[in-house]
Length: 76
Image (tube, rainbow, N blue to C red; front, top):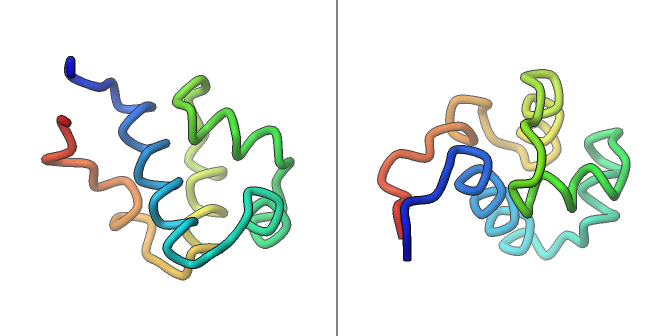
């Protein structure tokens, strides 16, 4: 697999963390006060989420923002 860009890495990580908590995209969106479509786009790496959006997602996942955005070593 080729190197992933930062948005793809973030999306994979968010999807993994969401599924680990057994949250649907709808549940994560509700907890983060975001649109479900936004969560889907972020998870697929199709948009560059703002810092505010990432902070909302991190809070909804009960993790620190710095933990969420640390995607070092995620070249699959």
